Amino acid sequence: MSKKDNRKKHPVLKTAGALAATGAAAYGGYSFLLFTHAFNTDKSRFHPDGIIPNSAETASANEWLKNSDRVDDTLRSYDDLTLHAMRIENHPEAKKWMILLHGFHRCSYDLLPLMMEADRHGYNLLVPDQRASGQSEGTFTGLGWPEHYDLLSWINYLTVLRPEASIVLYGIDMGASAVMNAVGDILPSNVAAAIEEGGYADLKEELVYLAEKNTEIPAKPFIPAVDLLIRQNLHFSMNDISTKRQLNNAKIPMLFLHGSDDQVVPAFNAEVCAASYGGEKELVILESTGFSGCRYHASYFDTIFSFADKYAK
Image 1 (cartoon, rainbow, N blue to C red):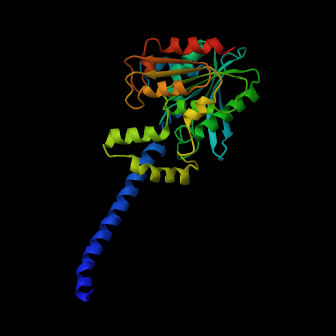
Image 2 (cartoon, helix red, strand yellow; image 1 turned 30 degrees about the vertical axis):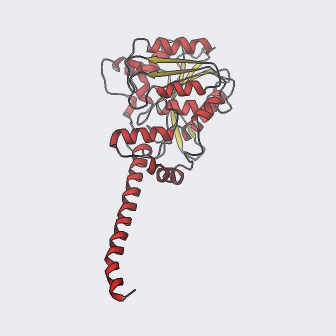
């Protein structure tokens, strides 16, 4: 090949190299955007003084909290984060407890209406701020995987504090994922039942679904890079975890609750999760309710507490 031919090819090679570099940068940039949007919780809620903005729905719950016997508890997570929970023990003679887990970009105080209703049904409450939410430390959520280890820690904490506690677990969306992952591990006999509301069957599939729904960009090619960021920052891989496997190992009674019109976590997830469950189970799809909207359905509280009261001692 002549020097002249070489000179002609140099611009082509430079252009190809520039395009490759641009493509790699775009791939990395979009992967980082997906990871940050899903796992970085720097905007998770924190309600100062435990008061959520007053409305017709929340005013009475705020007043109830002010008059409750409340203690703030903390523990250290397996990866050395300080985690916070509020413990409300308005029924010191009762053995019935609920551990309630909030959803994505929320905090414990967002569960006030449910907390108040559980109190009316005679339950004492332990309500954690999940990692990187509310008053708990952390930068990243694990969308239900590291959180299920945190939940196991809170269960152990409560059983040491109240050895005769009969515990019902409840979680919504991300909290539901933590509950579903936890029930597949070894639990103390104190855990009587579990309820998940609006949880997803597979983390990887949910990330792909949301990314493609919101951007119309095929997301599957970016998942390996997102998983690399998860491994670097959260120290687990989506390839190594399985909520369906956890559910298959579970034994305690569990209620799967979902809104029929949920466009964030479609209702088929509840059907998949219930089908994977190894223990006694109930599946309830509430009609005409969307994401985090089950609590607006007329039968919501009756559904939750008719199930929980069957098993809590």
